[in-house]
Length: 163
Image (tube, rainbow, N blue to C red; front, side, top):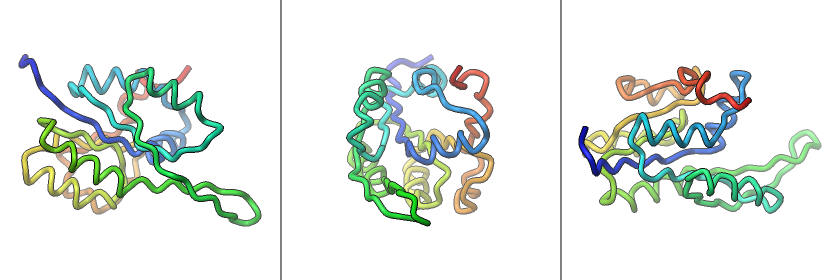
C-alpha cells in the first residue's frame, strides 16, 4: 500500500444527517470519521454545517472526532407556524474543495445533492474524484452518470449506526 495518499472528504452535514435519519438510523460521527480514514485514506475531512449557537457542544465533539468544521450562517424562517432553520452550504463546499484542490490526491464528496454535479464532473475530469458517498437510497438523478463512484452509506450501517 502506498503511503502519503492525501485524500480529502467534503461533507454536506445536513444532507448526510437527514439522509441517514430518513432510513431510520442515526450516524455515529466518530465511527464515520474512522471509516473515512481506514477505507478511503482520508487525511482531512471537511464538515460543512450551519452555525447555531446552542450547538457548540456538538461542534466541539465533531472537531475532537477529527472533522475540520466549516461554518455557514443560518437563516430562520417560518413554515406553517413552525420555526425552521436553513443551512445551505453548497457554495461553501464547492469553494473549499476548489481552494484545497492542489493539496489532495483524490476527493470524497459526501452528499446526494445534485447541486454538486458540476464540482463532481470537474473533479472527475481532473482525475481527482475518489468517490461519492450518498446518505440515502434516493439521490439526485444528476449524479447517476457518476454511478461507478457512488456508494450508499447504508452499506456501512452496522458499522456506523449510533448505539
